[in-house]
Image (cartoon, helix red, strand yellow):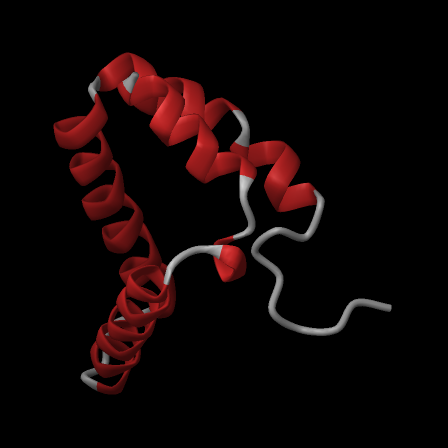
Length: 88
């Protein structure tokens, strides 16, 4: 059941998810911006955020479900699932 919950999250657009997820994304975005303003490199912040996110997913769903979720990331990335700017 846990794996199914994680897969359902992967299949849905983040924007289509609950208000709680939108609020959480706003908080993470603010923390990311604060780190960059404090002089931390954006790449460093991104890698730390990914590490923290995967730690939480493993703690919540386990390694196998998280690995299955991660297998779908290349397709989502290439498909523009994380792109926030207009593409030509």
